[in-house]
Length: 177
Image 1 (tube, rainbow, N blue to C red):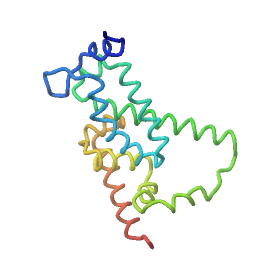
Image 2 (spheres, helix red, strand yellow):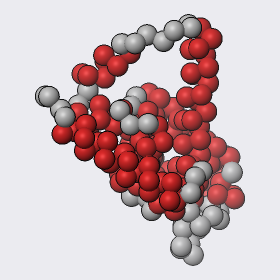
Image 3 (cartoon, one colour):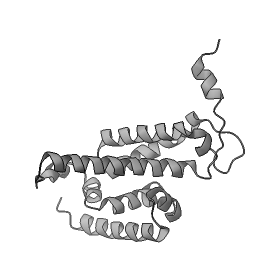
Image 4 (cartoon, rainbow, N blue to C red):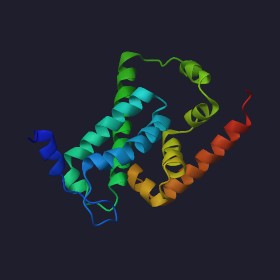
């Protein structure tokens, strides 16, 4: 006896990037949920936020799986979707905070000091630099793939990553721990 979940799993024809055999969404999810979560955790510096953005990104990809699976780089589309979702959430959050309180507290970073040195250093980067460093250096994307995910030119990704690395080097050298 088959249930509707089994039927849905068998009915999802897809292709691995560069492979001729079909890929199921579940296999894609198993391959990419950890790398995406890690990248998002470094971007957001918050486990819960990273998990929520990851879930939303996979949901959006799953809704379009018939088209996404046929793409040359479905994982690039996944990272781009996740990055866009994070940016949207960040913009909404900033707007809500500005509406709620007119002046932001100056000591919001006190809790960050309790985290390890790399998270503090990553937090000192601009969101664009942090995203570029995470996608290029930690996820292992090329500048072209990262550019697609961030919606910028490959040269911009290279500049952002280089500036981010320089800032990280300076920050890590200036540690007084």
